[in-house]
Image 1 (cartoon, helix red, strand yellow):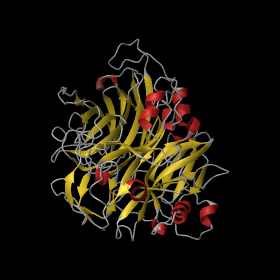
Image 2: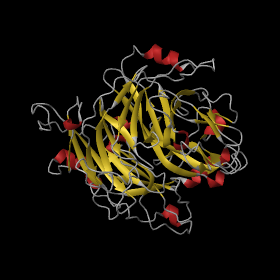
Image 3: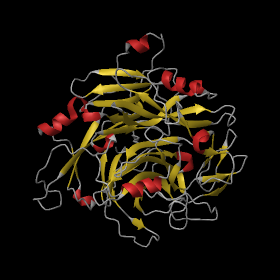
Length: 531
């Protein structure tokens, strides 16, 4: 399918309602690239009906928008802590954004939170479906991976590690169960993910299927009126890559009637596997295919990442969405390749899966797994250099002026730098046949320098043109603007650089704002993304 043609053909059509749940949902994501979990539940695109003349540095007659952000780390706390953001629809500066505790005296805000206002993830009653397997249960029931909100903001879906036998490691893995919380009643039910994910890999004939677990994150997808979790899956590739872990994606049903069922892709498979479906083990076609090596340990360029990894490539973000032209797409990130990859939607599009756009600085490797070069997809090798220590999360935004973007967090900008948020335009072009081309996937993008360095985790998204909210990740140098050390939380910052063919549009960065998670009892609380 020629997606460029399809996009151009539909540009003149009226905008369709987004079928991607982040358009009207509270959103919550948790994850860990260092074995540390966090949840940020956010009223991301939900306008909760609060319009009031609030003075937050703009004219008092302006109409303001409220968003609710909730945080829960797996370090020092298990309860959602909320912060309320108030800002005008045309937010353009950090000072436009006011952060306060939620105004629970406002019935619309109180109703929007419901039973989630003080949700304690440590409280858990083993469901019958799990109790039957006579297993040992974990003592730590906080989400392991992502939490997100379903249709009508009525249910909160969360990865969880319920079984003690489920791996728990510093690679952000693993979950075995989906916990589902009803906002109005507080009732909870569980969906068995582990068994169904492993069954999907086994059905597809993948060696190592029994090592497969939901990992890091998922997104919500609806097809034919049915809700599914499009889940990242980690498994050991065994005979394919000599024992290196790798990634897949599986769609699992979440509601009665199809709960736990696996949805087949448009190609009839039970899973999407990166190395099988759009990967290569060669080193000549690493632009429209993702390179893999048939070795257990990958040796990175030590000036970029002083480590070896037995993981290819640590997928840690996923976004299922529909463009304004009505084209369904899927985006994902993988840490060790430091990039965002945009593909045709495996479940909502017809035809084979194609890589449509890449953004970041993935490595190029020889057959022994040693890094010998770096791609610069969409970014300037001179202005941005390689993205160090990985990249996390991806978020889709559609602006009223027609611009459509994806946003991610780079853990380290430069060898000695802090983290940075990048927002780039979706720009699907015809596949280049000339492999001498050096500017593959060129696009306009914006860089936002953060005040902290997230050693792991982290994520970001725009509040409006040029103003962003970001999660602190696993950071030991997260400070308030007055120099007070904070355990972790969120930061509001404005863009520092905008590039469209060149990167000369730098500006003086205004002071940032920060909000601390105060329920933890440890020095550092780790947070993943601000959705």
